[in-house]
Length: 58
Image (cartoon, rainbow, N blue to C red; front, side):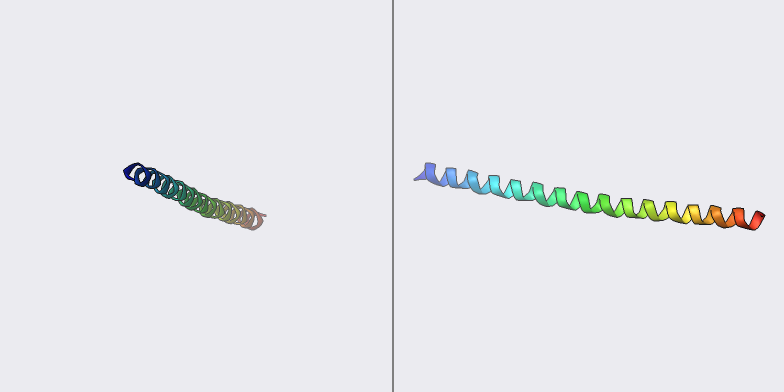
């Protein structure tokens, strides 16, 4: 009986660890996506600013 409980406990802990790893990976990918969006927006803003400066010089 004790061996069965230990086996069930190991399965439950394994499942919890697997779910935790999945949630952590998804959170990491979301953070990475947000950072990429901000970097792209910053690059667009810088490009637009440089274009306006060149336009003013001409």
